[in-house]
Length: 260
Image (tube, helix red, strand yellow):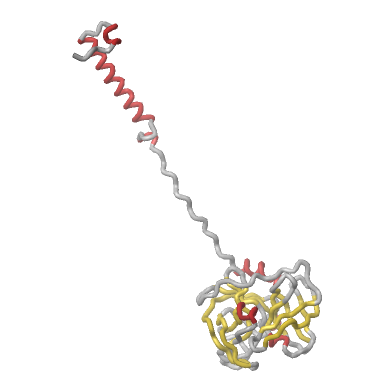
């Protein structure tokens, strides 16, 4: 026979008392259950809310205006004493300017006008007529020098921005997309290959200017347009030397038309 607990014995643990204790114990269980139901974290009244998953931050691409503001300080006007007009872009912290070779090919004195108004004579540091790329060394630099960022994404359909001086309209900006890669172009200076084709509006005076990707990085140097009408007018097809070829001194640019 199982011995009764001491507290039952002390209280005169008869059957009635054991029943009473059983009833009290049952009531206590009910009270505890009710309390848990109404106040515990698992109850309907205090149902925990599941923590929301973190929402990824969406970074918007820079607008054309943003790209222009960022890169315009790196863009220059290039003129020669014989009247040639083109564009250049500061490519290094020492002020070296990238441009198209045909802009400065007449051999006359070169003048650079920087975005802040600084005017300087310049000499040709390197010239690659086969690639239609030249670098210029200005005698006077703006302060501060703001070089553009070179390199970037090149893919058909990718957004592009061009900044230049078309028809003397200085610091003009246009936008479009990359229409094709590895194109060729026939010009008065010869046939060039390996070019980026794009549809952002450019015209004579734009040559040597930067072709930028959507992030504002220089992916090419503008050199020519296709001109089916023979009027030196933009027909929606333009070409740029890829920046890698421009820096390496290779490649060159057919769609038949003039260099700019």
